[in-house]
Image (cartoon, rainbow, N blue to C red):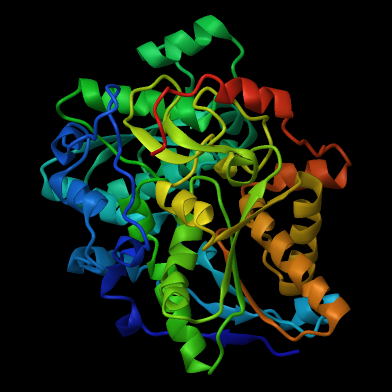
Length: 452
């Protein structure tokens, strides 16, 4: 069975990023300070370059991609769109299944789409050092790569459980010149505070963000770079959906449903936001964010103002949250273990324009293995969540006989996650639904700020 692969050439890489803010039915809620008042853009200049801050607050629909960034993207872009014929046959579904493969980047995931932009803007601002966090290691690897491309030193606070589970991600970062620390550390006040409470803390993205932000705020030579959640990161990732739309147009197709895994939200936003513009114009397309049941931010979280980090160093953002001191279990989809979600994605879920589903760990690996045996690519555990949701819809099409066109973003490969697959094959993985009582306890500790 021949593979259908829809390719673009380098001249078709988008020249502009798409900013969903221009087409939102309601304007985004502003970030707030501890006093409950909106934070001015100037306050963000302590840790971000001006160009990034301007993108963060922009309402312009199209923002030009600088030539040096676009040139860097040619290292792996445009990424292919592939018709999953073999998976369709294995499922016996009348649905057409397409996926866009972001694992072709040097770091093996979609994360460099924003990393190269952030490294470029910091270099242009005269910054030569960045601090950041990483969960599964995709973002840390990507920023390390981008740092090498633009002459910037990178320090990465890697969530401790992922630091231990994914040693070769750590090796990738170090190969590209980054310094990698297991978070929480004793090098920051944030880390020391967490270790005093729990010397054996597995860490979390919220904790690692606290450490990275604290370092950037305390050093004039250092800025902070974030791999997800914020508006400018979602913006940079829209190259995914923009390319996909162009590829579908080439073959005269259009998806009925779009799926992407969702942790902080950059992968889902980058895939779905360009299609959401069509939805706003009246096109019938469903957009589905897939998250783990062990970290069910969109499906069981509370829509409220909360900190983006664990100890409260960031502004308050209106988002779906499980509480900033939420520490999720050590599932292998480390990139999805975040207590909150992108304010933009959260707003769209709240307003009913985007759907969210939660899937358990074992079924996601089942889907990943089925996909690998059909299509040949071993997906990252994070990506398996989107695959699971897409397969479930394809099976529903089989039951109903409805021939939908389904599209998911394969956000990265799983070559550095084989220990997780080993545990799956040995029957050592467990499904974990986060206890309702624990969620309520964390939500009780939310900052007392009205959602408006």
